[in-house]
Length: 288
Image 1 (cartoon, rainbow, N blue to C red):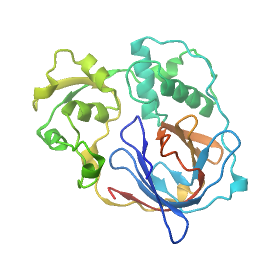
Image 2 (tube, rainbow, N blue to C red):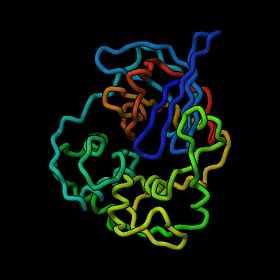
Image 3 (tube, rainbow, N blue to C red):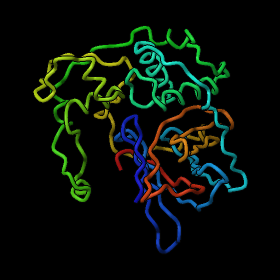
Image 4 (cartoon, rainbow, N blue to C red):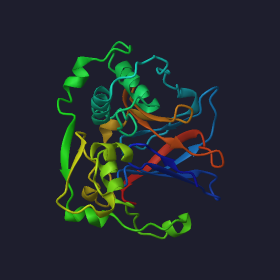
């Protein structure tokens, strides 16, 4: 079993071997309840980068297979040097990129690896000069950097005790957040330390409904709005492809040759490395 986790929300890719058919099934969940994919693939290697090609589009997955000889990994666009922006500028750019589906990792106001990759990828995708200069147009899309979130009674239902062992966690019907801090941080795609920095003096162990918090003004991840069910196939996404780049730790979605979104991932580990191959998506579901 192999797990992929993303900095933005919680993304998992679970793989298991089918002994009878010699194929592999892939199960994928995104953001604690986005899309679930069931796929088969055959393994192969590329010369330098290790890729997995999936035919899916932002959680809505189409059912088509691609032959190995037709796969062309996208060009690398990350070596551009960027300056260290101040915290306010970096936060606004992170919010803009996150809202645009070019995931900068956790919002923290810092010039991290995935922030740099997301910014350059966005400029590349939109034919903008790939320089370190800040495009004012991007900042103008985030005129208000922070907003206020008030803790609700319903939020407390998302928090609970989680067993320490993976075996015990697997027995749970669902896995709650371990604290309100974790809940708020994931809701606003931020690092927990950044949320704490924005709210000095808060007692996170005894946070009560009605308390107001300062948070990044990003589109929130509202986990309670996801409901179980199958995702219908969308013909409009039939031309989309997803490249999972285990070298750069990125998942990139292309519509034909146009890059449309990028998300950071953690593709496996040294003991359970990500298998490479060509994938065929069989279906999608929410809360499998």
